[in-house]
Length: 224
Length: 263
Image 1 (cartoon, chains in turn yellow, purple):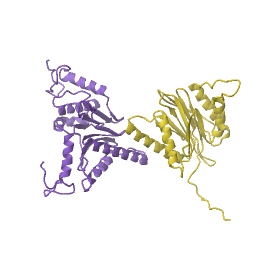
Image 2 (cartoon, rainbow over the protein chains, first blue to last red):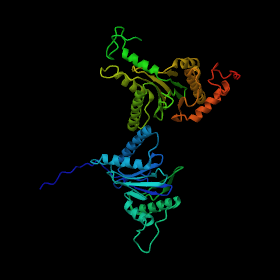
Image 3 (tube, rainbow over the protein chains, first blue to last red):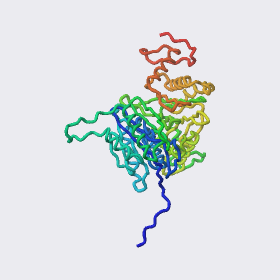
């Protein structure tokens, strides 16, 4: 039997990197490293994977950055149209649905983007949405996507996941973190991921969304 | 203008070389409530009169933000104006998406004019019944354009369209030479005075007019009622007695040196 011919060119590339988001009672932390790679090469140590889509809504995406950039442009254009029609900013949950629809629109030639959407919902509480490449999404308390996600997710589960109500002795639900604890946790998980994931490193960009505004922080990471 | 046998189709010329349907469309602009624009080197101000159909209804929106650096004020068939605003917004968004830079105003008005011209040369269409004052800021400075239903467009230092706009135009013609070097605040005050001219006796309050400003470092935005009311009151105190309980105040003199009238 003749085997199928395969393309010797791929329209996709993986630029690596990791994204994390954690939602708090009145804040949301969105973080991503700033390394952009291709294969075993580093293209740049200084590329932001985080994009502000609306006043209280940010998108962090790892994967193929050309697709990520195109996706960001489509969403910002759609947000402008929304603002013209409704005279207000899009809420984070609304943007969450829009992102899902936009991704599924290209179900048969997907955006190679692994997204985490973070911000404040209409009540002012932190919200995080996590996606796959074709738009399946879910609102969660915390999430991570990208090359270091398998290293980071178990640690976040350990710290942030509510214990099962079936376990004995009965345990309280996990107390929500305060903002500084969440930021410290993010720094710690990235420091760990950088040790073992070659595609994650250089610098960490942390963005904190609160009702009164947005704060940005940069932390140096290992560059090897 | 009287009816004649050449005015049924937009695609029929008159023996004198006129397209009457297009001219009738320009008439529709004159029936709408007034809209005014003026510009300096760094700022453009748009103002409109809020005419409501009845006391029970709200007034129609006549000033639209098209992009951070472009806004329009319309006079005439506001429905046509709304549709054209949507087109203008769409063009700006598409240009921004492709070139990652703002669409220059000059290009936008040409596209709008060409769109209007199409409707003057199709038998199954009618001309847009709305005039647009397009305020824009680009690398070459602040601009004000007027787009006609005919497909023509002109650049202006200051202009007024709609009903009783001639009164405003007279005021603007007197003062336009100072506009280029005007400050932002003076420009807004002049816009308010021009609006007052079109009201012809009716009291100028912030509920009867809408003001929008665009400038260097200042994205296009519509001013809130409170600020406008404060500006009206501060300029009135200089001119004549504030008449809260005395009926309409007649403006005798536009110059700030005028002595206040005695009650």
